Image 1: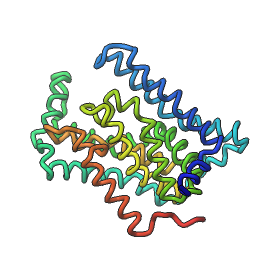
Image 2 (image 1 turned 90 degrees about the vertical axis):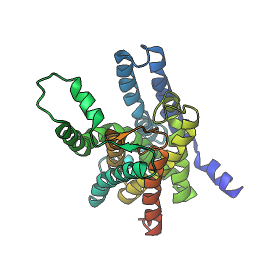
Image 3 (image 1 turned 30 degrees about the horizontal axis):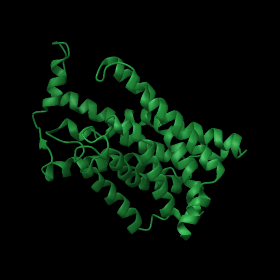
Image 4 (image 1 turned 120 degrees about the vertical axis):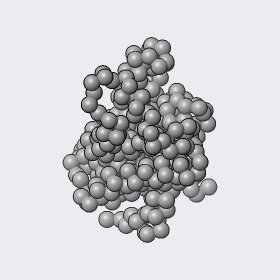
Length: 296
């Protein structure tokens, strides 16, 4: 009962307003593709890309509006102008890549996918390109991997910042009176629920649109531990934004060399096999005392 009472106190008027702004416009944007174009068409895919990218920035916009006009605070309190410990940015980039790599290996080891040394998917992509394309499957694979671990994380960081400014930069600090573990758990659950309209349309768990909503919550709680650690160590939304952006950039890389994979069970970091990688990192952070992060 005491925890429930503390939880109610944490949801102050500004926090409720923040959540309203973060959820409602984003859910409208998530649902727009249902009314535009046939599913699978180019028009539909373009609408999904644009509307969902805009939805990613709704938590950040909610943080800016709530801070400035509801709390009457300076936007500098969101620490967008701060980077914090620079060394953490290396881990924000590297650990997602290692977690995705481990997910791919475990997917194969658990028998949830078949390793494809012939690079069939790459060859199919090449077959659709002009005949004089001077690229071999291995070269195309190398280019795709290199882009995914270098340029793509930087680009994705700009989109992920919208979410991280909201969930980690604004919401997490306001839930910290509950305790760090509790704040990370609650913010992770809220983050997962926020994705519900997109998951119901096939995001991450296309074979399980309803069950996927609950699976997404599990995923965001586990991933939220890693991202919260980055924020609490740097007190900057940029570090978790880089971690989040890298996850988005490399999440599906194992699928390039795996066949016959149900992505609910394996292949991507959001799959149940991916949870193993996330849980190992989360467990290490708690075991080594990196979480909870010391105050100050």
